[in-house]
Image 1 (cartoon, rainbow, N blue to C red):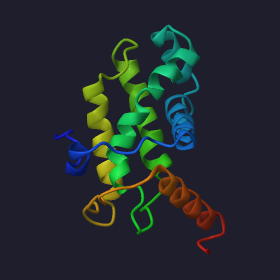
Image 2 (cartoon, rainbow, N blue to C red; image 1 turned 180 degrees about the vertical axis):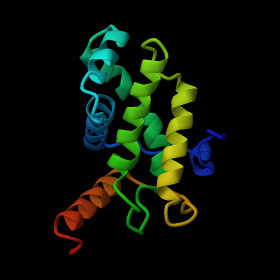
Image 3 (cartoon, rainbow, N blue to C red; image 1 turned 120 degrees about the vertical axis):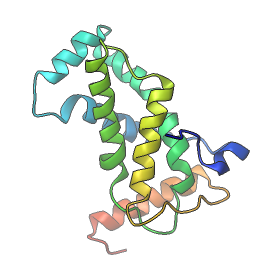
Length: 162
């Protein structure tokens, strides 16, 4: 599997993730890791295997957020609506995958390469739901990402009405 970021990311740096979006993603990573299972003992096993405390686990997992952004950013402000809810279908699932890895690897988090492969696959699947992923635009700004996110959230809240 190719974990190389899209071509546009290799040529020039991408804008940093908005801190508010990063906070939302950290909440969804936590949700996927600790709350998405019907097995109420899973969270206890995760923390026992991790062995360094819940806050430290969340801080460590948040180190993956720039990797998610690296793969998502080229598609973030596409004029077309997202094919679903990115936080549920990508970020939360990544949290579940991190937890599963931790449980299956004696409390160790995925390596940067392993996580990049997970993120690349889920982001690509998400943006390919209605066909091939769109071509990344040449440039974006964090402000436009937030504006797009908020506009879509308001539309969703209002039942698709502007």
